[in-house]
Image 1 (cartoon, rainbow, N blue to C red):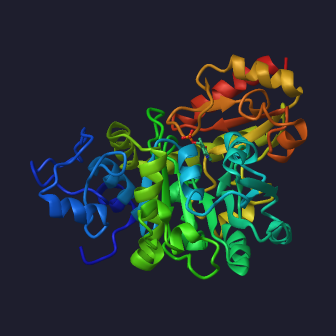
Image 2: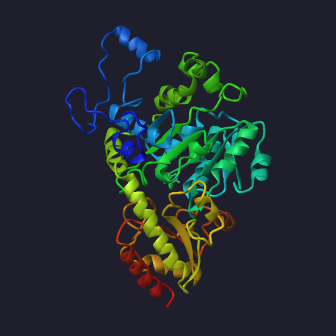
Image 3: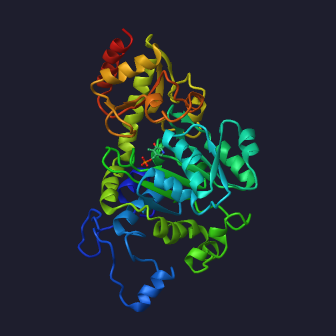
Length: 428
Ligand SMILES: *Cc1c(COP(=O)(O)O)cnc(C)c1O
């Protein structure tokens, strides 16, 4: 092809070619742990990163590599890796950048599990996080100290579906010379390409829209290839001799591919948070229809949010695609294909009415997931955001009177009818 392929072409073809051994048109599930070396010289070249190939499936596997290549193409990156879950991807993204005593400046609007991972669990590695409002560039900059190694935010942020101004966040990151990591799970590369707006790294929970039907967990980290890891001296794992890989300076040897190769040769090798080829297969299948599903997700979400906003039983709807949303302007610059299908709404009657609503729905599933073909609902204050204080819950957009919905691709009037009957019971 001489023209640059479009998104719909890439979501089907990127990373996949007919299998050289059999001609199989679909990407085979390479269910193998190891790969035979041609000879001792071939093995040596692979271990020295002088030749790219397969050694052992903890590092790379052809099915998983096809998926990594496809997501990289859709995000407009130079390289990427897949791993076992979205949470694994977040650790894999931070791992080459961080060391004991370093910190990350993170948005206070995040998936509940990510807030716990960053505020508590990473302390065990000697890392820490500071949470700030990414709508406030001055606060972002003020939070940076000599030990800060990255900024972290979500594009369409959990749980309220708030649209983050990635370009503004990237401007702050550029000014202080640090990488910006964007979790693009809820937007998907169809609705937003963070790299286009200045992000350094993009992480995904492929568990959600990329797979699309709630079958397997997975994650991905995609590198823009644009960050200069050598300039500040703050990233010795990437831009100084790496003792964990016989003293190789990855940035000197591999330039824009340094992050990706380090993630495979050190990160996956030693942390082992690898995606398995079965999971990669399900996700490859899902991605083939990503654009079609996201269009319908957005269309349905807009209809449901508009209906809810006009309903007297509802106090407030947070959907970024509604003109009343404070972040609505960003649908004109960054989220031009839509504001996603994840949002919250506040029910009159508070905590008790929310619980009753969740229990009265018939079409919606009450699950801790998002980005499924099915419509999903959860009450964050009693589940995903339960471990946070009430102040943290409110700051994260998960107040006790809020429910979060992930609008599926069922018939829109069926989704609305289900909410209607359940709201009648919840607010009776
Ligand atoms: C689900 C999710 C995660 C965690 O991903 P897992 O695949 O469940 O580990 C991280 N970030 C966001 C935005 C998510 O929705």
